Length: 518
Image (cartoon, rainbow, N blue to C red; front, side):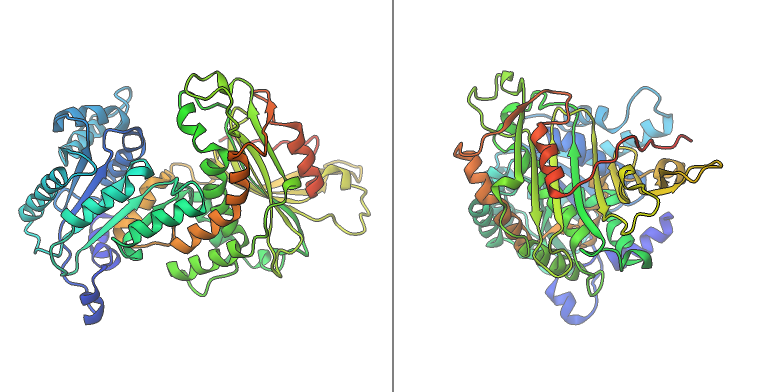
């Protein structure tokens, strides 16, 4: 998108949370944009939030004539000290072009730092004063400016921070501007804590102002799911229990907690990955076609899926903990926290009755990948005697080496009538050469500025997802469900493969998908 196109679209797509504007049927002139990163000195902000803002700046989505970025944290440092800390995360000095380095310098000049506590008004009054000065310098009419607060913070401080924002940093009047708050996972530890947190924040902000971010919903291939399912005719009659035998949604890492053991041990693999990332992907795989692409229509269908999930059975869960996990000095010696889990979910509706959805996530395994694997049923009347070669599978590789491929049986080239497994392959690195796939955080921050909540989690959606996993999580926390030890660099506990087989998954032997080379 060119710069001129962007400025034209910006006026119509950035939306307004203003009831006056909605009532009048028009959107007033949009004022300046202030982006506040709370927790600015933390790892999440340095590694994800600020780099995403920088990439949006480089692409022309954040322009210097209207945007200013504020960092807020308890650490007492100057503007320049924060800029120096961020510089290395924005671009590598090695191999960076003069233009890139120049862009970094210009971007860093947009950042101002404010130091203060997360639970007292003094710091937030100062923050509001700095924001107001920026708005005044951009000639924004009071109440027309836009304020985006990104909470790159632990959930324990969300209530106090949100209270301070509401008390000290809101737009002073309602003339088409808005105040929006982005909150990161984990949003609670179970159903009760999530509901308490939702209630506390819900008393301060309306739902259209709250953006519960799950970065998996910003991934390119996850965003492609609705297009694949509902814009391609040949999937429509196949996508049901009559043709699909099982669905796997897999997240694998080939490294352990690596210094984050103490943090990870508070949550475990189910809270960290399965209850949010993988369950969100399941919703997009299993949902019915929405009435339209409006955010509420899409989120309505996701909630219906979650509310159709049956209670998890004990014999459809395998937990694991890699050997050496408790060697981390920050992890308790008696930790019962799983670093691996395979959970079978069953959806009680007309489309999916009897089809197991297998969610699998683990650390310190033999490979790193995230993928969706839809396995179809055997061909009835197998005249080619090729069943042992494997079933048809539709695979969406989310990361790394983004790809969509279909495993199918074809004739082996030659004079004999023999069969072999092959694939129809759309590998993004080959098909879209030179196209940069945006980071998930870039897309989601831009959606927040535009007021598009399609890829964010609604309160009732969050509640339904916690309802599925809370009974299992409580039993793990109480030590009633023990993880099985497994060796780092393995596939995980052997019992997990046995559960897959019991659920109906048929592994293909002798076939390995290899990303095509350019």
